[in-house]
Image 1 (cartoon, rainbow, N blue to C red):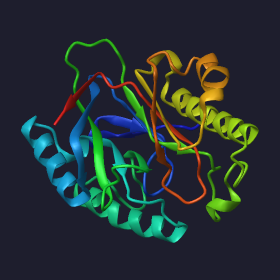
Image 2 (image 1 turned 90 degrees about the vertical axis):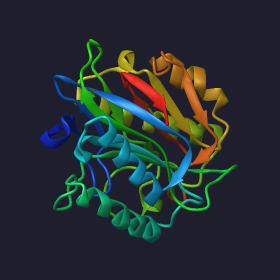
Image 3 (image 1 turned 180 degrees about the horizontal axis):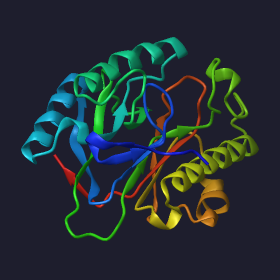
Image 4 (image 1 turned 135 degrees about the vertical axis):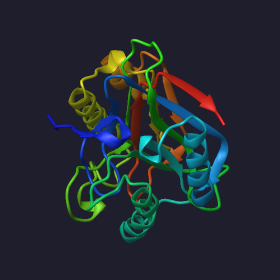
Length: 250
């Protein structure tokens, strides 16, 4: 099981992963996670300014920024993904979050098929606030796709690469569910704590919703299925899970 690290300035703990994001976050004692969604996705520079203004308006530092949900026009190549991520972490570094290749902020980045943004944009974000009486512990996981962690090209790490047959999809979905369960366990949660489970794919997973998702208890709060592609060419299925205490629309 992965160990978590406390990010003190943000009042949350996280699962270390790669320089561009962590695998998930959970609020520390005395704090809770709140999620805000934009009425429409905002281009990254505009979105970061809006996040900063919102946090300032509620008396929270930029270091409280804990997770974001992005929308990109098209899946990236491996090199394009690397270049985007290097630019993305620049703002987090300025905010006092990203340091020396370590990034505590969780992230999901997917690519809509319809109504796609012209440039990479932010759809929603989560942050910590002082607890306001709720007894629910709160968390949010980063998006996880059908590729194993590690170095090397994505094509070499993707489960059943280029296989979108019913059984190929089944194996992909099982792999991603197992990864979500590992992250939940690392943060001290289980499926029973999930408020929202989100799936991201353009493939037909209807035959797997009951057999693989509902049967594992992943859908206690329902399943939100976005008709989008994961962020890197070759990936076919992605999920994330959250247990935010409250959500609002900006």
